Image 1 (tube, rainbow, N blue to C red):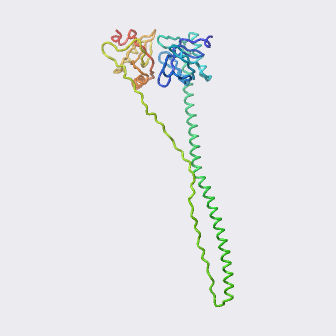
Image 2: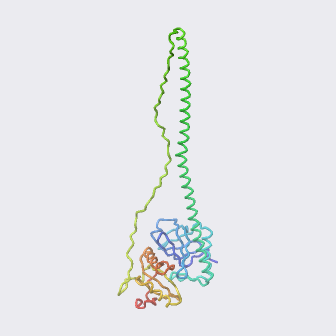
Image 3: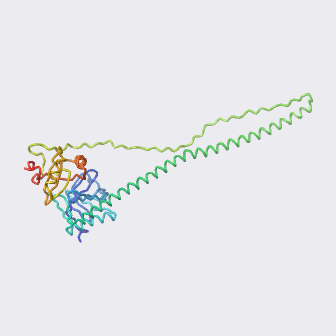
Length: 347
């Protein structure tokens, strides 16, 4: 169908750490991503591949392996060895795009599904990925417990077991030494007794026999030291802190925002009715740049114009607490002519 030969204008992102990079084109062989210092000097990278769709959903494919090379003002990254499940998801997206059941709008950097079944399939992919991540974490935790348990038991056996073996051997040596000394003392007493009897027969008036006092022999020695296995844990703390630039705050009068720059904003909701979204803005009072934009045939409620993804995630956290619903940060452009609320801002 061509998906194994060509690259397509399907909006997507690469996530490296907390930074999102725009994927300009992609297909089965690989992808072209915007130029970034995060890719400089790195031939092989591992990143999350993010496919945004329907204005408020995202399909995240974690740990995609890429082999990247610089190319003019961008990077071309070839896909490494991908697991079957990752290949299946990428091929599914490309196939539905070619069949026009996924519509991509590069100017908005968004994809839209034209079929409810396609939307269900994408959501099912995301559930499977989330389940695999949870199982992977559980397996890692179990393996770590087994390893630490083995180290702990081994150290305990080495400490107590070897002491016990050495103590038994030392006691046996002491016992053998005592036995030999008793034998030597017995033969000495017997010889002296015989000598005393002979003297008694020569001198009948002597009726007392000599007594032998054996002084215990004390041996001085150094106490044997038994090696003890010690298990220590070293905690590494990363004390580096990144400074976050100041937020773009809403100002009165002429706006300081630029049409030539990309910002981060929070996507709250998408609807075919602007009235419902405008009513929802009552719960977002006090937040910067609360607006309803008309994009195609849809109305979208968005908040904020932030410089960094971290700032926008903080704003999204505040909105989640107010609305008790799922919202997500995304890349936005400053286009006041699309604003239907507040209209005064758009003029």
